[in-house]
Length: 185
Ligand code: SF4
Image (cartoon, rainbow, N blue to C red; front, side, top):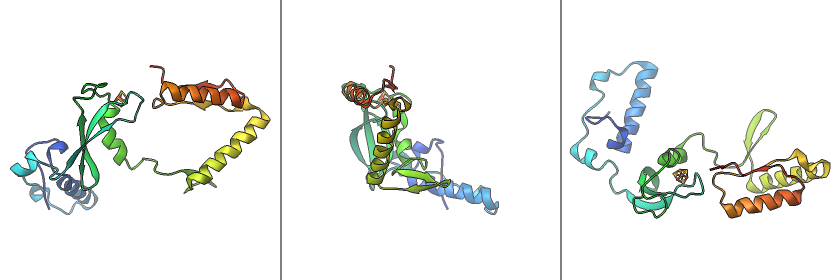
C-alpha cells in the first residue's frame, strides 16, 4: 500500500495514490488491523511534479449560472480530475465564485442526479426522460384545468435573459403570474 505525502494537499498527489490512501483510511477505520506507521510513503518527485500524467487540458465553461466563467478542465483517461480558472476568458478574466471553483466536485458527487426519478410507495425508481416529460405534461394539463394559480414556474441562475423571457411568456399563456426568475443578481 502507498502513499502520501510530503505535501499535504490532495491536489499535489496522484489520483490513484489518493484513492489508495482513502481506501486504506477506510480499512483502518473499519477494522483497525493495519499499522498506520507503515501505511504511507513520500510522494516521488515525479508524482509531486505531475500528479496526473497524460492528462489533457480542455477549455470549458462553468454551467452553474449564466455568466459562463471559463474553466480549464484537466481530463485523465476520460475522467475530469482537476480544474483551474481560465485566465484568458473574456468574461471571467481568471475569476470564479465558490460554485464554479468546484465544478469538478459537483460532477463527481455521489449525490448527483443523473437521470429522471420518481418516488412511488416511498421508493425512488428510475424512469425515462419520455415518461418524465409525459408525467409533467399530464400534471400541468390537470392543474391548468382546475386552477392555473396552483402552479408556480421557477427559473434558474443558469437561465439567460432570453430564456427567462420565454418562461415568463409560457407562464402567462398557462394562465398564472406565479413566476420567479430565481437569480436576482
Ligand atoms: S456560478 Fe460562479 S463561476 Fe460559475 S459561471 Fe456563475 S459566476 Fe462564474
